[in-house]
Amino acid sequence: MERAASGAAAVAGIAHGSAVAIGGEDADTLPWALVDAVREAGLTGLHVVCSEAVLLSEPVRTLLAAGGVARLTCAGDGGRAGGLPGEIAVRWLPPADLNERLEAADASIAAFLAPIAPVAPAGPVGPDDDASQPSQPSQGRAKYRREEALRCDAALIRAVRVDSAGNLVLGSGPAGTDARMAKAGGLTLVQTPAMDRRPLHSSEVDVPGIHVDRVLPAHAYP
Image (cartoon, rainbow, N blue to C red; front, side):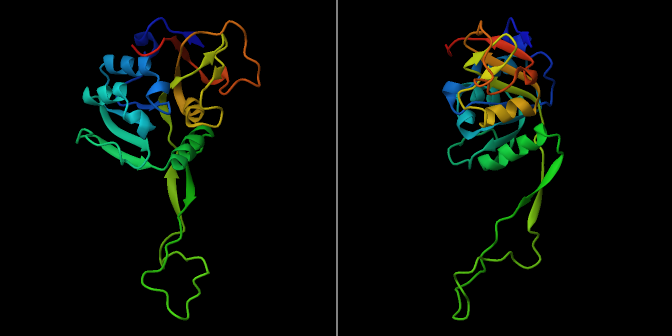
């Protein structure tokens, strides 16, 4: 684990066209210093993966406005995310689907089959139909769809605490999307308010340091 002296040093190695996951549950848990550093690096053709709440934050909106983002994969329904640049291709996913695809990347599974919800028959229920029975998939429709793992070239994460070995304590816990992004990222970059002098106990660790490449100490958003 490397301690980065600046935002530019932290994001070194992210290339044009990279898939970049941005963690956080809202603007307060966003790794804003790392997002700003990506924008200032002038990268183009990026594929950004994040939640809808993070997409609404000022640092991410500024990144989009800079013109370096070509694709977005967002956990949410898009109901609040108006005014996105028209040239950006957007795919909305339920949060559970995004987590499944990140988990597959962490497990080195290239693709997997996800069940398709049964489709209710069209039209009113007839007198001979049993409404208590579960609906069946429509004729000719597959019962499963193929989903690809969401492997990210880099993951930008914000941690509450980080020790000298790079072990992380996350506000969202070990089962949250941030932890999945950290494990699915080829290059995992972490922003933290300060480094922890003492080693974290294993019971405190949300993400082991083996998944962490660089840590950038940075305080509250100015």
